[in-house]
Length: 154
Length: 154
Image (cartoon, rainbow over all chains, first blue to last red):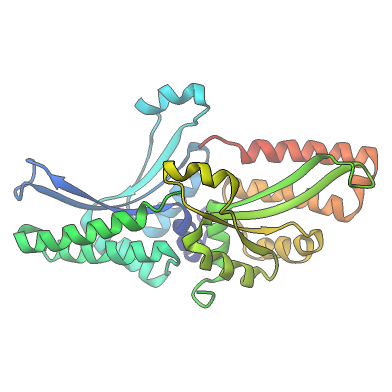
């Protein structure tokens, strides 16, 4: 499968199926008491797992795992099928692999807008701006803009 | 927008967002009393209409139209947004433009399986096989396989 998918196929696919978001909120586990964690995910029906494995190989990071638990059990009657998810949340992988990939093979439409907002949060986190109050406030504003772009109905 | 989307972007996007199907059933309007109409569609939130306009230009056929009527009115409370659809159902356009496009810029995953089934129906319709009983029976079998591949949960 990986031989038949090109990087430009991946960016086209991600425009439809990918999601760039930021986990943002209070979390005592962190020194700063705030979790600011950019993540990139694609979730598909489990029978297309090979597509996610190919994308993982092309982008060069992330993990693919099954979602055949919890909420899906109760959806059996509704004919929901098992899902599989590709996720990158390691900030170093996002900064050195995910962001450069989509700069080289650009997205388009609303997803490109989402990516630009995501990218600016990633840069601020890499610059440790989330560790001071003003930086955190700036990041929070961008995260809210990103939520608006991501939640556009459908 | 059309300048920034490559044909390989289109095929990647269509793996996630496109649908190849066949309208198949009794219809007195047709000489054969059966409608066998292959169609290729992509439906998006209306704020991404420019993506569909670009794809229309790249593939070189089809129409883009709004779906801001009927069923959407009742969904206002559910925060559904207006949708826009790209559709190609002209059999000549499908045979000379859509099919060759996705042969040149291949799909992948389950969508590739759907496309192969779709393509074989298109060829049979172009060969007028839908105008005799045996041909129609063969097409019906493939249409059912295509329905199974298209309806796989999610």
